[in-house]
Image (cartoon, rainbow, N blue to C red; front, side, top):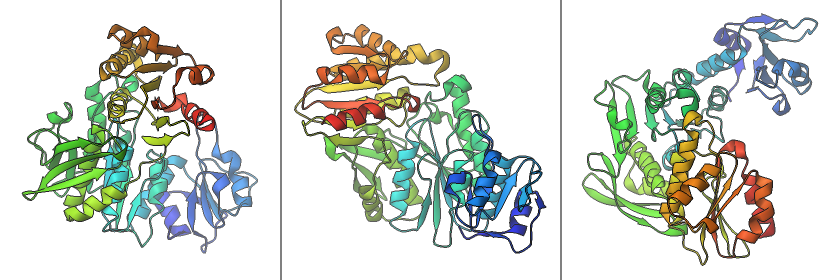
Length: 458
């Protein structure tokens, strides 16, 4: 961060300064008092289980130059700014700070694949530009502003991820960023518990384009049944996919197991071949997004190809771990919904190994009234995929076992457990050296514990 003067901070958040002097200058912004560095601005946020105001004194002791509070701090004679809403203040400050940089931004959202797509887009653009990108899971109303506050003079382009749980959230993030280009990877059923229908999920994702005009471009999955509904707009649209009619279309797809996947895209009448290091047709779609963005910014096919070759997936996303026993673990536990579950199971089929294919699948959360049917359907998909063993974890995942059995999977190859610990207690008796094992479930299931257990026992 380049830093902000007291006057800039007060103006940006429309706050009232207390005990401040004009020469205060903040060199960073933090919402976690444990990460405060000398000269930082501490923003005291309120959450369901915490109140940042309880840590204001701690932040000063760690070197904070200034804090932002939504209440008057009686008895504390330290420089602070009083505002009505500290979260809005953080967002307003980040909006102001971003405005100091005249660089384009790409924003990525979607029901699944948005983090991998964001990372692929950043990897491609990094071949030609200095890129600021969303790190980790900083894709929400707090994380996105903090990402923008990492901008400095070296950055030439920004790539940010936008997540949401309800209507209005992406519109808020889009207002802060005002991206030049927006990507929607797909519209599935993630967060349907709150949004109630895929139509509402589409509406929520389309908020990404709230502030678009003729100067903006939308990059969308042209094969997705919901996104196909998008007709002509005031802004430009680039559609990608495997079907005819897409401007960026993949052909000659070759799945190469652990080596990833290769495919061809015709660019300017010339067939160009690309490869990504992780398996699964869904990653072809993610790569097509990155190719579309690279072309939008005038990149050559050779540079885009090199960018995709340099791409490394984020932690716990199709992360392949080879154990001493020869077993291959596919760690995809970051999150799960029906679409991403089916994509991961499909990818498993392309991974060649000496043993069986085993799916360890946990609860998919936030599915509301559709949860039981969605889990049942995923189980049917597992059976149809030809997987040899299904292990379910959780009270809802048991419906996957029911769906797999109903679809004809051998009941002797289906196991159900209530919790991770129950699973681990029996797992070594189920697995055989040389198996390929997919581990996947919603974030709340914390199924990385199963991956760690298997790693430790090799």
